[in-house]
Length: 373
Image 1 (cartoon, rainbow, N blue to C red):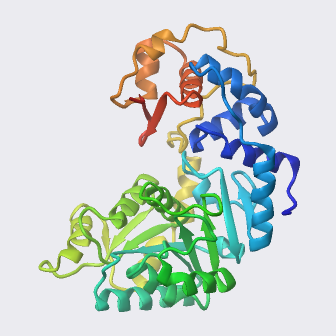
Image 2: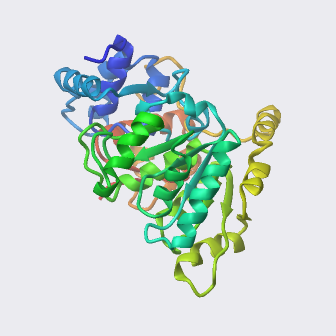
């Protein structure tokens, strides 16, 4: 079995328990200080949220998962571990843990994402492969999603030196099936990452989660070819929301596969035509980040910075109804709930966390929440 510390075991058990998402995981660890204390507190918190019984993930199930990881040769890195990618950790919904196989040190290089259409043109694939190759020759790691088309071309161009593939399902599931050989080769020569447990077949809901990891890992995202409502544009939007560079390769206005890139450029993405263009844009990324951190008015990246004091009993005896009454199926921001209820943000966050553990709350982009139907 994969050898991990008791705290890491407890963290994995916390992640695998029902109704625990990236935001609630982060809040629980911050509020209780350890996964073990959070696990002890969850049943009573869920009860206050309206759920009479809460089943934590069984320890036997976690043992079996660790055995499967060991058999596959995979490992874990947890949020706040030294090995966890620092740029990804900036996201408020960063994955609590990543399963990985391969060369984890590829995360230490500057990373650029290259994404695009699955049904990409031959010209787009050739460009993506060449761009990826030129970038890795300049000391950059390339990350993409192992999909057909542009993603595959990007991996092909960077496989010999520094390619990172983020899997939508489990590390042991080959998707698309025709990329089985590529996925195996990346695990040997590059790096495979996944948020989902082993054995998870990728579903439609998993791909936006994968896309946020791709965008979160990279200093910038290059879209080579994409339709207007494609997953590639979702990745570009997530990159922009995270304060990263968004770049697009222009295409023919009569080719529908280029429409998404042309829209991105019109809306402010940087037009790029070579590796030099990309390198110039990401060159001063660290300097800008340091300046933002030093600036007294810099915005906080995480929306859970005010979730409460270390005292785990704070606000437990308060009346939650004023907050719950303000919730509906329409998403609303946490700040708005605090303003209208006149409750401290920490008290509102605790109420929302209890509702989420009870399965009654949905979280949305922009720190918005709603009641589940």
